[in-house]
Image 1 (cartoon, rainbow, N blue to C red):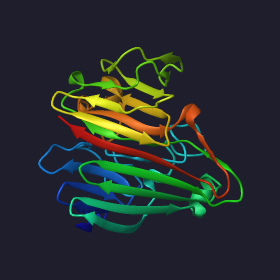
Image 2: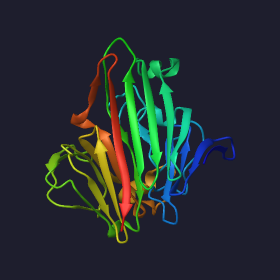
Image 3: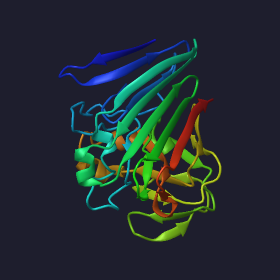
Amino acid sequence: MTELKEMDGGFTYLEIINDTACAEIALQGAHIFHFARNGENPILWLSDESDFEYGTAIRGGVPICWPSFGMNNPKLPQHGFARTCLWEFIEAKDVDSSTTEVRFLLKDSEVSREMWNNKFELELKVTVSDELIIELTTVNTDKKSFQITQALHSYFHISHIDAVFIEGLETKPYLDALTGIISHQEDNIFFDKEIDRVYQEVNKNILLKDINRTIELAHVGSLSSVIWNPWIEKAKRMSAMNDEAYKEFVCIETANAYADFKVLEPGESHTLKVSIFSYN
């Protein structure tokens, strides 16, 4: 079952419920802000203080960073404009009683071309089942090439920051966004300070290991991944986040970032895809 709903203030979102899982996706940003399998804790983290107001990015879930990740294009807002644009809901399809597919579309406009003068079509396909599959496809509908960086900025709900670690990025080079230094990962990633890193040459699944479950990410169309937790001091400065929120989530972002940028010629397309599933 899929149903368009409104929050107080008119903020519109799509609710998806099937025999396996439930999800909620805002039309602003095509932003998945809830996903949970039936009878289980949510896989995605959402801030208790997150704003659901048009023009303000949601804190948590899976923001879409596009056509720029971070602040590498000074003409664009941080992480681009897709996450605060109103997308068109195209269709919902029940593949079977346990699997639902939904599609959203964003096209260039006068407003987008003032910030980023390119013509495009951006489609998000989300599959809700015992796993969450997210596919972001960029099509260059212009007569000239353009370059993008992008990320599916996934916030994952965890038991406690002290209880988790990440496998799958051992030996990989990364850019430390806090220092600007390029290093290599030696072992698993543990969290005892602020971490903001763009990993490169990512060629296998990433595992977020928690006390009672493992969240696994399988990616296609991506050789980079961003690992982020703001830790204590930055969490205090961030909007729509309480001071203790850093203990509740870890971001593992499937990306085309830093050296993994994409150049699309006229008529070309690129799909960034991640499959997210969990097990005990």
